[in-house]
Amino acid sequence: MAIFSSLAVSLNADRTGKYAWHICGATAFASAFYLLLALSMTQKNTYFQYISATGATMGSFSVVPPFLGWVTLGFKSSSSTAAGTALIVSVGNLGGYVGPQIMSLSSSTFGTYANGIAIAGLFSFCITILSLVLGKWTEKDYTVNSYVEIADPELKKQTQPLYLSIK
Image 1: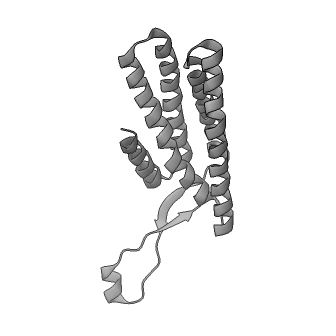
Image 2: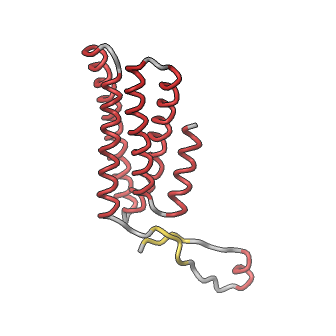
Image 3: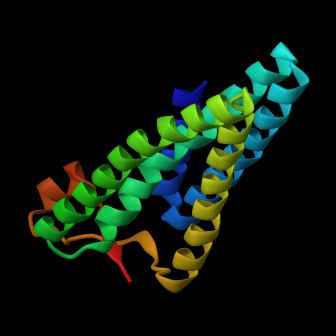
C-alpha cells in the first residue's frame, strides 16, 4: 500500500509543483495514524493496530519523494544539490539510530511501545508544522511554463520539449 501512496503523492507533487503541501499532507496523515497506532497498542486491538500501522507507513514513505524533489529543485548548482541531498540522508541516518533507542527506552520503562510510537507521531507532526512554515517562506512556482523554439520545422513537428522553470 505504501508504494502506491508514495507514487501517487510524488507524481501529483511533480505535476502541480506544490512540494511543501504534499510533504505537509503526508506527514499530517502519518502523525495521525502514529497516534492512532499508539492508542491501539493500549487497547490490544490487532485489527486497529494493523490499519493504523499501514496508514502510518503510507504517510511516512510518501514524504520522501516530494521532499527530495523540493530540495533538489531549490538549489542552483549540482554541487549544492548533492550537499543538500547528503544532509538529508545524514539526518535520516541519525533518525535510524535515535528511533530504535527511543523505542527501546519506551519498552523497558513502560513495558509497551505505545509511548515510543506516540513520540514518532509527535516528530512527524513537527515536520508538518515545519513544512507549513518553510512552504510559505520559500514558496516558488514550479510549473512548466516555457519551452525552447526549434528552428527546423521537421524536427519541430516530431518533438514537444518541456522545460521546468522556477519563477
